[in-house]
Image (cartoon, rainbow over all chains, first blue to last red; front, side, top):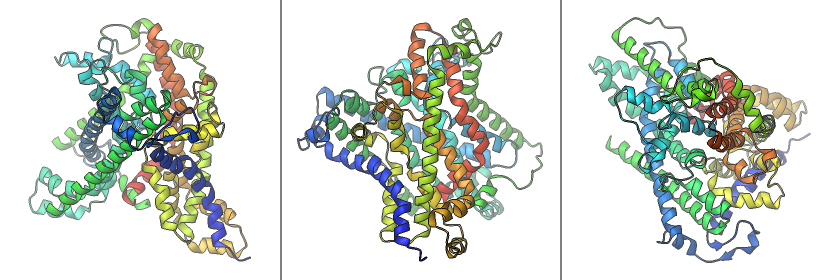
Length: 297
Length: 291
């Protein structure tokens, strides 16, 4: 029997294409379309009324809709920036510890770090809400031993978002460490030998050999870290509900509250589209930055 | 792929010499491991304390007389068995379906030539980078049209295929020799039979990695189940029941109970990781480096 490649391709690709199409690609296009409409999530798509860019005017306006959304956008930006800025250097540092062969325990450290990545975010949020407890929590106790005054952690607007960044870094750093180790193994040992012969110290070798050659790994890590960071939801939904005083109101939480809980589907969609655009801009800027660094180097 | 994996571990056990650098590195590794493990250790220790111990100021670190009371009580507060079953159904059904759909699509992308192949592949893979919140609102309406809202099926059905799985399978199936597949075709084997009896066993490590990835992702998933289940507590997975434990805890102040629930919820994904971690690390390396 002659093997019919086109029919086989159709059969093989059918299930995955149909599922991803119906449940991701079509909803994404609908989000874009609905962002230009007034639509209640509780009713059918046919009830959506076209209102042009009114939703976008509203979410960037000076009413409470606009103020809440802009606060959530800024919070998400700050949270994402802080997460990336902490995660990347930390993952390289821990990657070096896992990768080195002078001292034992590298693979063990990798296992410990990576297992935190397996823990459900809900459980992470629950545990950290107790660790952060100002009186009964061990973190302020430990700070006290070092003579540092107790912190407010999740209970004050100034420290709440940062506390969630710490929790996020703790959960995710193992994943980025594994990526960093993968990048480190790609660097030829001969380059280190050559630098050593030239009399470069360990620190000089790190900055002249390791860091430049980790460029692609770090770019990939940064993209994934950004995409992960905008998805923060569980700690906010579970512990802070966006507070205190909107300090932890982030986009995933805010969009769900508007679009699902309040049923303002059109408005929520406009926020989701804005998030998507912000993400594209951030990642494009990252690539532009990486390219300019490459040229100047 | 296999070379990258081998590079992660030294081929022979190196002998360590006691130098200042080695001592310093060992200390750094110990500190990093302790900091990383501390929250989970605290969780387990607190689950073994008495309710009085969990409320002491300053906090006590070790339970005076470790006991499992919190574990027996937590089942009275939330329907723990039911939630575990729901989570198991969600994780097992989605994982099985993802493996099948990813193998099929990955095979077609790796071994067939057809028009617009690269375009279709790019379109499907792009969905991997889309945060779920971007599609959440219309998706909720679509599952509503399909009559799935409020049911376990609503959690499952939109998650039966996965872009990362397709990507991973294509990467690995590419390396399966064409001669193997051609020989089976000459023998008259159907394409599905070739895929599941010849190609699938050849990419077993990738399937192991995808199993872990999909199982952990869907066991831990919170945003979509919370949205689609519409408060139907009979269908709650363990992570939603856990979140309700906290609101219960606000009144009763029994932190031990919450930590016992969290410990139980953490066990399946972490245990699966310990068993399959080698494959998972390899697959991340290949998706990052080869990607």
